[in-house]
Image 1 (cartoon, rainbow, N blue to C red):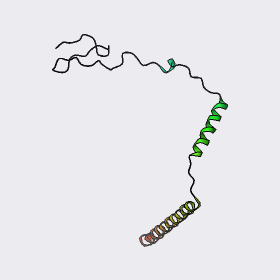
Image 2 (image 1 turned 180 degrees about the vertical axis):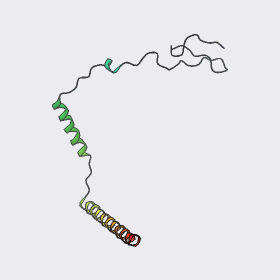
Image 3 (image 1 turned 180 degrees about the horizontal axis):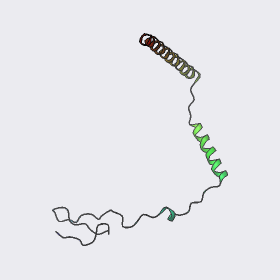
Image 4 (image 1 turned 30 degrees about the vertical axis):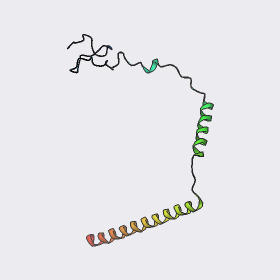
Length: 108
């Protein structure tokens, strides 16, 4: 078995790891430091009016993707919400009435 003298990360071969004598693959660690954010190339930023126009275009594009419910579906959703709210009001009222009666029994 042969050994390499360079450190891992230099792009050299690593020490042999397998028994058949084949060399291990090259080390994939980075050889240098990551560049700083300040070193990145300058990006030209569009002016405020171009950014507003892009924002409005994106809003219009998203609104075209919306599927609106039909009148029947809307009426069904409305009824479901009304029934659910009525049931929750009934439940809350019964719990309130029960807790009032329980407190009368406990505290007189």
